[in-house]
Length: 501
Ligand SMILES: Cc1cc2nc3c(=O)[nH]c(=O)nc-3n(C[C@H](O)[C@H](O)[C@H](O)COP(=O)(O)OP(=O)(O)OC[C@H]3O[C@@H](n4cnc5c(N)ncnc54)[C@H](O)[C@@H]3O)c2cc1C
Image 1 (cartoon, rainbow, N blue to C red):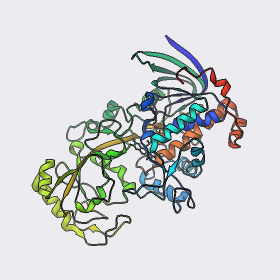
Image 2: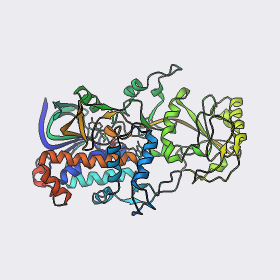
Image 3: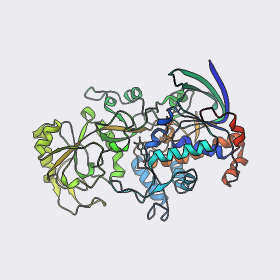
Image 4: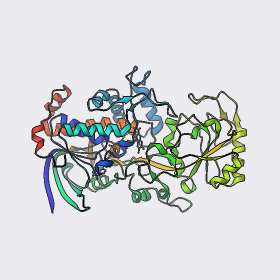
């Protein structure tokens, strides 16, 4: 039997974007219900794995040093996306990033200065004290205090939309005894913030297909974050005629430790020494410029680069000089006293490996090594070149880290606009909104710059929540919210809060 219920604003998802939307709608005075597919212990989606958000600022702001003006942020985004971005939507997210932190602090999020390591982010990125897990916990706490109804183990699997107008969502509730119950929830407006389809191996496999060696490329992918972003709502919305944006193979993909678990390895499985050495594939050949740009601007292309290699595996090779210059990964690298021994230990053809290493070492042109600037240490006469930080890998001990494509999130999603409204045949829905990964493809056609995922999710989560509330309450409520005078109506929601909380 399917139960039925209703609420002002239904938010589907339990990560950063969903929580931002739910809190905004609740602050405006709406009753809000939030559905999280995960059990409480795994709540928070990919957001719980994050560390920071990228913020524009014209002068030093609390934990952020110097300035990072709108234009520079925009140019960084333009560069990594190769122009595949909606400038209007991107600039809205960029501008929001300069003013969202007081609101985040109000809901319990705390910031700290950038940590040292390979990411030079003290100027551009505000770090969450306690990481994304603390951010998520703070938002959930605030949501509970404000009377938002939170359902864990609640997976939306169907949605009803009539002529672009959201009607209801149908949800499966997983019970403690393993059985499920089904509920159809009617709401005046709805925010979809339930991620991409990165957790769904079948969909990844279909998107990536077979390569020239007959391999199913996605078979060797690892999922850096949650297992709960299955892309179900993207499919259902597509079935209902929503406009879809993005290429299914475009994603934020990092080269991560090949020994990481299939899901939820998180940031500690990242291998951040690529620019300090060389990277070879399973045929012991280099395949890309390891020193093209600063690591924060390049780390997210390496997952794709490795995905396009045979066996979807590569090895990051460094020597003693790199030790202490990057954040050590959680698993030790393979260590050897000679490069020959290293080749044997990681199973690469010794003579090809030595040829690659000798060619590289001989091609390094002496300069002044400085990992904090785009230095003048580069190679000459080899392909691919190494543009910066090219110093010979010649000082024992030598290290190898095996890397595989680690998928962070996919970019295919729902076409939206600056109001976060989901589009149907080019027309914005009046009451269905999307935020976070599920619509990030509007801003990120491809590429990535560190911290922009949370920038997009925070900006459009807040906008979506505001718009959803505006549909329910009318513009006057929003004006009150802007003026800080809206009062959550905690008595009206009390009846709908489930026993669990
Ligand atoms: C290891 C790692 C590190 C990262 N570090 C950073 C960083 O430092 N800075 C940064 O900007 N970005 C970072 N990202 C990217 C960032 O996590 C995402 O851009 C951002 O969290 C997306 O937020 P979201 O709310 O859209 O999705 P999520 O946080 O993934 O939330 C989606 C939610 O929807 C739920 N859900 C899914 N399907 C359903 C359904 N059918 N019904 C109900 N609920 C559903 C999920 O359980 C989850 O709670 C990182 C990602 C990973 C994996």
